[in-house]
Amino acid sequence: MHKTLVANRFDHESLLRLKATGLTDLHSAPHLSELKEHFSAATALLIRSGTEINAHLLSQLPKLKVVISATSGFNHIDFRVCRDAGIAVMHTPHANAISAAEHTLGLIIATLRKYGLARDNIKMGVWDREPLLGSELYNKTLGVIGYGRIGSRVAHLAKAFGMKILVHDPYLEQDEFPEVTFMGLEEVFRHSDIITFHVPLTKETFHMIKPGTLEWLSPHAVLINASRGAVVCSHSLQNYLVEHKSFLAGLDVFETEPLSSDSALIRNSNIFPTPHIGATTRESIARASNEAVDKLIHYFRSAHISDPVPPNTPWAEQLL
Ligand code: NAD
Image 1 (cartoon, protein in one colour):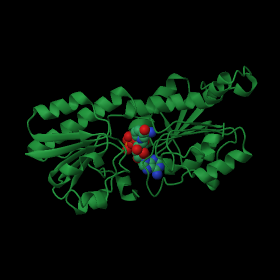
Image 2 (spheres, rainbow, N blue to C red; image 1 turned 45 degrees about the vertical axis):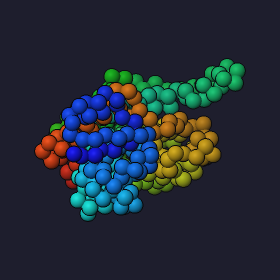
Image 3 (cartoon, protein in one colour; image 1 turned 90 degrees about the horizontal axis):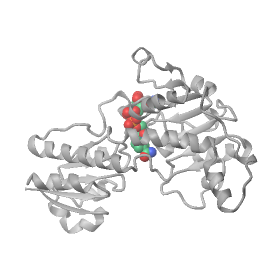
Image 4 (cartoon, rainbow, N blue to C red; image 1 turned 90 degrees about the vertical axis):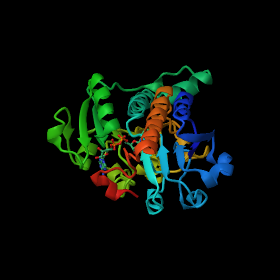
C-alpha cells in the first residue's frame, strides 16, 4: 500500500475521494514538517508552493516515488534532484489560469485607478480626489509578455474592455493567433500603455525588467507582474520609480517572498502590491486539488505521468 503525505491547503472533498480508492494511506497537515514520523515510509507527496522540494528533504524520504504539486509554477521544486533520484514530478498547470488571469485584470484596474491610495486616504478621513486621478482601459494598448494559458486569457478579458493587444512570445507563431499582434520585446515595450508578464522564470526571462529595458517603456506606463518575482529586478524598479513619479506598477509576485514589511516596494504609493494571491481562490484550489488527486490515482494504477515537471516545451531548456 502506498503512503501519501499531503501538505498545504488541499480541498477536503478531493482528499476524501483519494482515500475512498483504498490505494493509499493518507496523512495531511498544513506543513510537511508536521508529518516527519511518516517520512521513512512515504511513497507520494501532494503539495502546493508552500513546500520546497530539495535534496535535504528528499534525503529524509527514501521511498518517495512521486511528487504532485497542485500549482502551475514549479520553482519550489528542484526537479533536477528529483530526476536524479528517479522521482516522478507532476503539476496542475491548467487549474489556476482563470483565477490568475482574473487577478491580473484586477491588478491592472486597481493600479490604474489607485485603489490602494484611495483606501488609505478614506481610512484617514482624506476625501481628496486630485491624487486619485486614474485612466480608462478603453482604447489603451496592453503588451502581453508570454501568451500561454494565462497570458492569452488576460488578452481575451482585456479585449472586452476595448483594449488593443500586442504580444511577445518567441516560442509561438503569429499565424496561429490572428486575434493579436506579435512583436519583438522592445517593440511591445515601446508601443504599450500597460505591460503584463505571464512567462515562466528562465534564463531569458530573469530580470526582463532592468535599467536597459525600463527605458523602452513610456514614463507613464503601467507594469504588471503576476508571473514570477525575479522577472522584474526590484532594485532597478525602485530606483526608476524615484525618478518617474507617474510610472505605476501592480505586483503580485516578488523576488523575495514573503516580502519584508519594510521593503521600499510597498512603501512606494505608485505600487499596488498583493501577496502572491493570483491562484488563491476557492475554485482554483478545488480544481488544482482534484486534478492533483486524479493524477495520483492514475499514477498509482498505471504509472501514468501527465503534465510533467519540467514541461515538455522548448523553453524548458532555459529553466533556471
Ligand atoms: P504557460 O506555460 O501556459 O505560458 C507561458 C508562456 O510564456 C508560453 O507561451 C511560453 O512560450 C512563453 N515564454 C517562455 N519564454 C518566454 C520568453 N523568453 N519571452 C516571452 N514569452 C516566453 O504558463 P502559464 O500557466 O500561463 O503561467 C505563466 C506564469 O504565471 C508562470 O510563471 C506561472 O508560474 C505564473 N503563475 C502565477 C500565479 C500567481 O499566483 N501569481 C498563478 C499561476 C501561474
